Image (cartoon, rainbow, N blue to C red):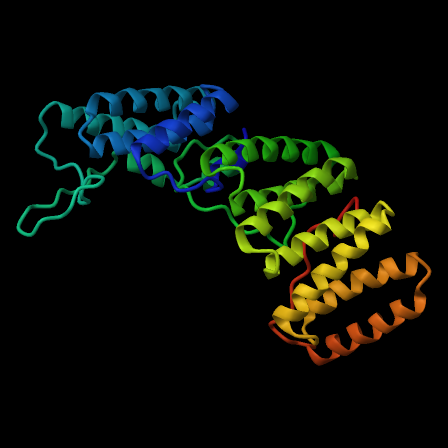
Length: 329
């Protein structure tokens, strides 16, 4: 299953139109019987129930239940939670006196003196809240719901891959996730730049340098357009692209990028900041490869002075994940 699509990588989908659109995208990309489709169907059923669109909610819960049963069997916790949700919803449709939700319906304003409804234990929210631990331990795909959130920042901690096949799978998942994200938030959103950088990191592990270049170029363009050409985040994209050109020995392309990244960080942080040393350290590699050892040594001395000044400094920059593993020089 394409688990990368299921941990909050997509923008918040808190309205019926957003989730309906997202469900269609998932069906096209992942298939109509995927675990991710069951997750989204459960959450959409929850919103339909809050809007008292009970028939539509029931249809989606039945669909989610069928998918879950086919994927994990009849006795999994996720299946049981969805079954209970369906029973509660059926009771509501049959005239149960249970009140639907303690929260106002979407776009409904609370009014003083008006009773606020309470949730039914085990509506589609139960599916959304179902724990994923047992599914993970059993090795079966979890179909419990998720809370969609903003794209996470690129982490400095890289997942461990045991073989190239696993990396290839991660690349395919990330490529699909990227296309879905573009459809949801637009191709120029900064969260797309985050995901592009992650994809470039995966390409690097397999030394797929030619595939990395357009991905890093796009990430740089997005940062510049969204944040301005002198924003510190732009310096990171410049450094990533420069390091790619350096490993490819395309020194004429790498050097101006290193210089520009260095200028941005000096302006933002000052000459003696660890983030400046991070760029200088990489730039020194290029200088050595282009027979300018004296200039490289000068940069090395400055880097050493910065590092010595910031020993044990909690503000020191973390190592970026890009190029630090298999596939790096």
